[in-house]
Length: 397
Image (cartoon, rainbow, N blue to C red; front, side, top):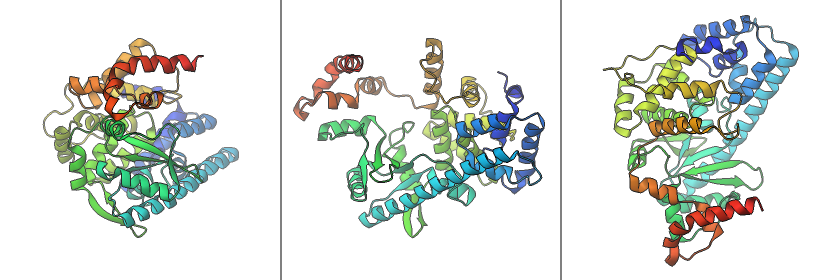
């Protein structure tokens, strides 16, 4: 659909959700209020609006944005539902904050550097409030060499690897570190989820080490942590949103908040993005801010948007207005799978043919299906197709 008419073709309820998916700083509040009032004045279905808020996970942000319009009349039943969702979001985020503080404390005692990703501290950095952004888990990064010690620390305070993980031999673990990016842990008492990252799927070799070198020593609740360099944080958010094809408005709202604060040198951001292979995710994110929120494009040297593939915008716009997030709508047509595959080749780094073949052959499930000694580890590659067929047959037996 044409970018210029994308918002107008969506329903008023969707437009209101989009307008309330972030909190604009003071200089932009009037424009945000105008977008909210336009959607409401177009004949709003409040029940549909709540469905969009749930779908894009913006309950506390949306309620806070609506409260900036005290003259707005909201049906009592809708008001109650929105307020309940906001309070539930804030309670959950507060719980995540307490768990994060406990994790940081045990890592500090063990001398393990840790870098929180997104979550409560991103909410604090963007809005000065740890409870405004909805989060379903904690995302923390550690250096690969610190991973075993970090696991041990987490286990000491009640975290366990989730059911999809199982003990690995040294050679299997080495393969996992090479091909995967995070492991998932679950808190035994609360059921909270924590993802422990050692790299990101879009990172080129050496990029993670450079981010650690640029990170900033920070303190929260008496606990030390490493905060991302501001440019790295922007590129992280753009690459994370791009990886998921910007299927949730809350991710775009994070970028909108950073953009409208007016503190970034976007030419410097673009320079680093070019050096790290993140040019297209960055430019697509900025272009989406114009389409979704009507924000002006930054003045960048050269013509960086020239020749940008249209799929980098079209696929996210389609995903934003979809009733469900991608991956929950059943099997896609082959043509759709090909479009998505081409999209991901643009937002994720190009791998060598050797690495691509290695990734294709790797399946951690193989290690659980057939327990081979490290001496026979090489046999997993030729046995991989057989083991996949075996698992498929067992599911339908």
